[in-house]
Image 1: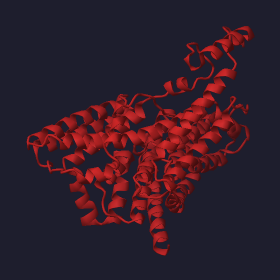
Image 2: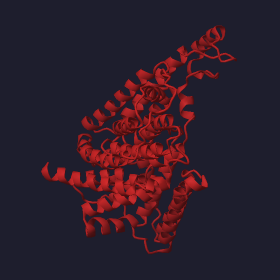
Image 3: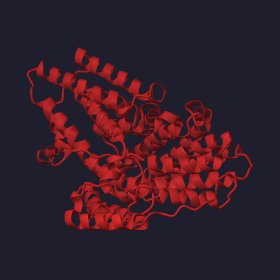
Image 4: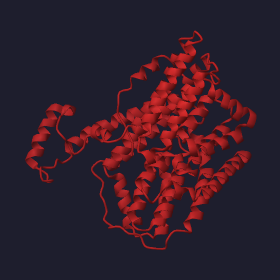
Length: 483
């Protein structure tokens, strides 16, 4: 589960523009693709991304090389424009990309804090323990975890869902290596497919929704093709599951105080974000940040009633009474360790995911300012056409990761109908399942099930996943033809 907390000074860019896309179209961007600056910037991006893809082998956090690449690329952008006498365009373009990142950052800050808080309250551990205790067969667990991944990811995002269901598989799989491997692949496909028909299921769908390219109700049109995309390989892989009973201690895990309330707060926050965006045309992040504020207030309440452990792990009533008095006099400014503290919950999580996203947004934005995305858009969406281009881009996301691919398409801003934007959302969302490194869900599960679920084990089933990809695209095109 990934989340973060840091101060974003670039938020002041909100005062400079009301629409990123409108401002981008007004900038006098030039073509530097054949210049030394453009070629060097492209080489820096490729080198940075090779290091990103090598994270599993060199154990270097993916955010580090891509953040350095972003800085170097924008320095080259600034130099390139300065050589033509233009000292303003590069700075304006950089600020617009920072604004784009700021809106997504604040939205994800709220959403990921909710997920991390539910994890701390043992909401997910309780679900995992309940599934283990039911005594299902391995094949039943395979289908249950896949089905849950498909329907939880639209709300809790594909990364968090994959980690949750992966924990269930590891808990019941024990020594059944084939079961763990195939179930992990099944979870990655299901989580990515489920995340494709909701703006909250993946960063890519969130970007499309926040740009106003697809409305909230239109995402539901992607549910049938997404379901087909998952079911085709899931059925093919299910025949390899061992017919053995699962293992596990069968002990139920109760949630901590407030777990159920936080679930309902999260659902209410999502409903608020959707309603203010669809009815008042306000940024969804306002609803998410309001809900985050309510969560923090509720965390303040929990901190006053959470029991405090003594030196030997037992509750010290005298110490609890002393601490309660201290809390009443100092409120949030308390300096002692409590059992629950919303700020400590956030601190425990890594910044790596959104720092990587920062680097991706700035790298792609820099290449766009040098003219590369306009060149790519001309070849893909004019020469090939929207449908073949979107199918090809979806397959590219298996190698490049879906976040930079989607951001590149949005930055190109090709003239497409809503049905074509839906196709792009679908293919980029599910295309990452073709390889284990193509999505955050796959990369996370490789780390969680080290030595069992690997790049090579996923690759052995890529043919089945490709059949599901083709069937999902065909289903979407068929629905569009009759709707």
